Image (cartoon, rainbow, N blue to C red):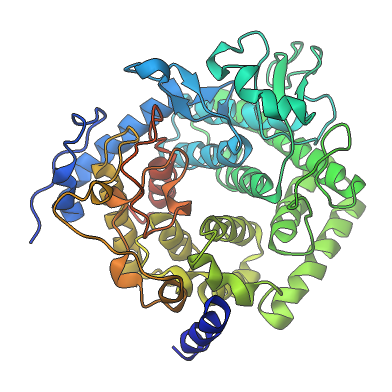
Length: 484
């Protein structure tokens, strides 16, 4: 409480009865018929309904959001009744990594061969985004098959990217390690990558590495696939690391270019999470001396956390409640990757870091992702936190799949006034946090959006709700035994 009061003062100086819920479903209600959400009760969503929503989201992702294993926003152009195109893909690398994690967790639960194939296809998408340029480890935000540009409205919708010189066509002879003797398809891709995209990449590869051990395979064929996949994953990490190091830990594309102001991977949580993974995967790609060198680099940065308990920018984290709320998602995702790759003896240190510098500022935000990351990384598990996370997932399941506006934005019978920036930072605005089903719709990831934002009356025209923000938290919770 003392910290919150102090931060509130600093902020001031700087800134001068529920009805039964309708069963969740895939089809949107008629336009304007969202008033039922105002009185919908997330607790009334049964476990069976939640499972049905997860299954529907899984199926929707497979049919609408994936191209060569790469994750895209689905769009319904020209008032189509089903998605018939894709969005800009500016964060495809970030959320392709998150999608890979969801498939790894699902396979970790089911041990089903079809689920393994989905995970392998997602890993192949990551490989494309890190190798199809012809320069191993050179990253790109997104890529689509050059032969079929129409669903992306290319080149028109990409003209500004083309004018800036960050759109390329890949070589046609880049080997496809998932299909020996064949090449990856030629792809048109956009670079200009930032730290955000690397966050999803490291997280997805970390979950795959830690969950999808060949030992858990249900049969010899699946075991062989997993052994091959781990070799490809290890080489991917090796190539990304070497490219970043060659560019002095600045993110550069295959031509050596970038123009963002977020292209540096300093000695911080992001680099530490990458090194934490690399020290494990290097056992497959390097000799003992290299593994030892990586371990030393990892220990050098971890020493900051061991001695100070914090990185230099963390005392300002709470300001993300006032603006750039998405930064919380990046922090939690990086910390989760670090925790799962850490030595068991170091995990309490990371758990305490998450509690002190992250979770205490977002506790009460009805954010299933943050709560589940906290619950997984904390021992003993706080069941109240898990229950809150599950209730938030049930709330998510109430929304229609399409990007209709929140009924609060429509002003239907209820006034809503979001808290001020100072109230958000100090924590006193938590009583006005919205349930996920009443928030502004999003095309990627509900949990990175401002929990006080009901949006406007204008829908996200043509965009379908992605569903990744349901399936990843759900399957992670299932894998760790938090949901039965």
